[in-house]
Length: 109
Length: 122
Image 1: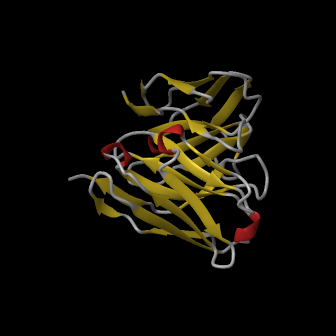
Image 2: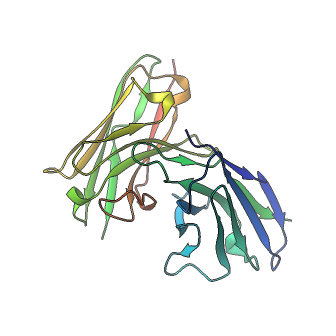
């Protein structure tokens, strides 16, 4: 099983600041990683796939980087609507398995 | 418009069974693998199970292997999750999810249902 470890668990940021979320895989997953945003009471929303490709309509302040075992989601200048929980997900070994990271809550400092 | 509508959740005693169903619409269902993801309220996401477009491969998270069975009916545009020997730790909101890409290993999700709540408690 591929384990994804996200850090930090909580990130306290002021609006306008930069936020970086890390996702580490227990083995190499190439660029087979996606990032999601989840707001309270909502299903997750896909932000980035293949580690760095932004979904159409996602603001350019969101960027993804990395390959192999180390990945980063960066929000260049946090807006109020960006306070949410962020998850990484690997799809390197589907089929037959997928895994999510434990999540990172980005909240207001 | 893509729609995924889950049903079948509820309260069940430990050791009991439930069958979740997901009705899909708005896309060529038979072209896509389908998956179930769960979330304990206030906690993180956990992939539970997935099934390829033609049902030839079914995958499960280790914690549900031997207890849960995923199946699909392409004629009815539906995917089910039969959950047996339920435990308290299976209590969660269960989402039916569709990958962005049809028929491929590039499995990341762009459509989620609203979810159905399963509570396992005596």
